[in-house]
Each structure stands twice: as structure tokens, then as C-alpha cells.
Image (cartoon, rainbow, N blue to C red; front, side, top):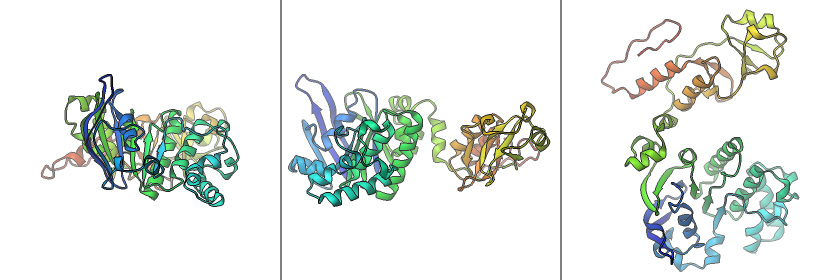
Length: 381
């Protein structure tokens, strides 16, 4: 556990970066610090490993006052990941990852073996071991940075906007990989970001800071979205916080339609015969959805280049937000529901998801509206 106890940082020119900050980062969980520029996020993070010394107050790690610890020893027991990875350009990838174990006096063979294992764990092939940072993409370099931070198996990790320098697709992949690793490793993590969506996705708890380093609110993501403590927090988390909150509500059973499908290579005549609708779902041999085509516009066999993709898949028992987004994003306005193996279950429309949302929020004593059977929306409010 990491505990801030009345911590402040005031610079000689009178600037107050952090003011009387108190909170706890529980063991084995991710605590995200988020807020506008100048709110003291990075300063707070760097005070944990004493890269910045507090002006007043105490920071505790597992009931040990960090000011009583040797700085070098403290830092070697804390993994640290920054925005641009901070890799040594003249060292190979495997030697970058092995940096801290070697500083701790590990045998070189053991350190390199551990580094190779960690490269595999963060999704980097062994063939990258002898490459240099300049030979890797930004996303690959960030993976190296995470592997290096994990190399000595530290109980605590500090992460300062580690994924903000990469494009949105790579960023989402890194976030997913990070959550998978955390599920396996259970580190105590303090994570800084300016992106509220990233904070909501990654944090077990989220601390919103005001300019000047004041703590506005700390709470689990679902509670933060549902019950912001004041207008500042409400505005910061965004006016669409009600939509974001759907990420924490599991989809109830939805009125799934069986969707006609066709495969790659099907002729225009086969596609038109499969449906009278304007859109037709294409699947592979394992019934995994690939995308949509418009049969009436086909002039040759169905190919992958013809497919309308993107944003139309949701797991049947996943968050309500994903189901609603799938329906809204689909060119056919039918969201595609899949099972845990990615195989097609069926489709659902946005108004049916909205009705399900209303039903899940309806007080238990209020009778449910009867189910209709008009074929266009089995559930009506």
C-alpha cells in the first residue's frame, strides 16, 4: 500500500504544485491520478520514488516512511515507466530490459534470461532482443519500457502517461495488454494520465486532482461517473458520463435476432438470395463475423476489400456500452453479438439495448412493460 499523508510540494518561487494531498493506493490495485495541466499529477508520482522531495507531509510504502529509506534502494524496488519509454539508445533491447537486475548484482545470464521471458510476456518476439530502440516502433518501445520496469519484479510500479505518445489503435492494444499483465501480476500501481477515458478503463480507483494539487475526489470509476462530488469533477469526467457508466453494467439477456450470413467468395446472386435487407453479414468458415456488404451493389464475388467493418461487434455478456455502440456504429444499424470465442450469436438494435438499460434501472417494485412481438423490436417502452 502507498499512503500520502498531508503531502505538499512548494517551490522556492512560491508555486504550489501539490497541496496537503492525502489518499491511499491499495496493494495490488491500479490507482490513476487524473486532472488538468498544472494539477500536480506527475509531481505527486515523482515524490513517491523521491525524484522530487516533498516540502511537507509523509509518503508511506507498506508502513515505511520513504524519507527514511536510501534513495537508490527505494528506486530499485519501484518500476518506473514514462511517456517515451526512456530507453538507452546504445543498448540492445534485451540489455535495456535487464538494466535494473544487473544494477542489483544479478548474474548476467540470469538477467538476460529474465529479460527474454519478460519480452515474451509483453508481446515482443525474441528476434527483437538484439535490436536497438531506434529500430522499434513507438508502441514496441513502450512495451520494452514496461518489460524493463517489471524486470526486477518490483511490488510497486509508477507509470507517467506511458501510452500517450502512440496512436489510438496501438494505445488501446497497450492498455489491454497492461490490464492482462496486471491480472497476472497484481502489482501496486500509481498511473498518471490526462485522459479520463484511459483513467476509467484502467483504474481500480481514480483520483481527480484540481489545479494546485488539491484532491477533488477519489473513487471507483463507476461511482465517480455516477456520483461526481461537484461541478468540477462532473465537467472533467465529461457530459457523456452517463454513457461511459454503461461500461460498468453487464448486458442482460438481449432480444437477439438470427442474422443471415454469407461467406467470402459468394456471388452477387447468392448474396441477394440470402436477404432482402439492404445489408448482409459476411462470416468466415468458423462463423466469425468479418463485416457487412450491400448485396444490391455487388458486381462480383464477395471479397474482403468490399467489407464495411469497424465498431460493430460486442460480446453477448459484455458491457451495455459495447452493445449499444455496436448497434449505433453498424452500417446496418444492427449490432453484432458474439460469444467468448468470437463466433456469431446474432444481432440487436439500439432501441432494444436502450429498453434493456431502462429495465435494468427500473425499481424492483415497478412492473415491467410487456414484451411485444412486432419483429422490429421485441422490447418496447
